[in-house]
Length: 113
Image (tube, rainbow, N blue to C red; front, side, top):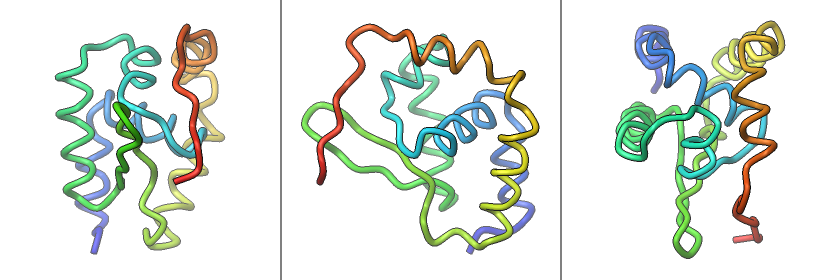
């Protein structure tokens, strides 16, 4: 079970906070999309995603060469509410990340699992 301490430790890093909010906004993102949006390296993004997955905040799924991350649908309601409030209150803070993501060349196409 994700505790408030676990959640806020996860979100205390700017890369993890931005990645989590982008995933909350878009529903699901792969590592390459987060690399583009956050303008960071694959090892760094993957390390942060692994930490968030191990905490129970995120789930992943593999589709061919892509690994997609999404919020754990079994998160307590208070976690989802905090993330949605934070996302809607910080659109400007995420604007550059969202712009890079929306303008990404070669963005993977999702298919149903």
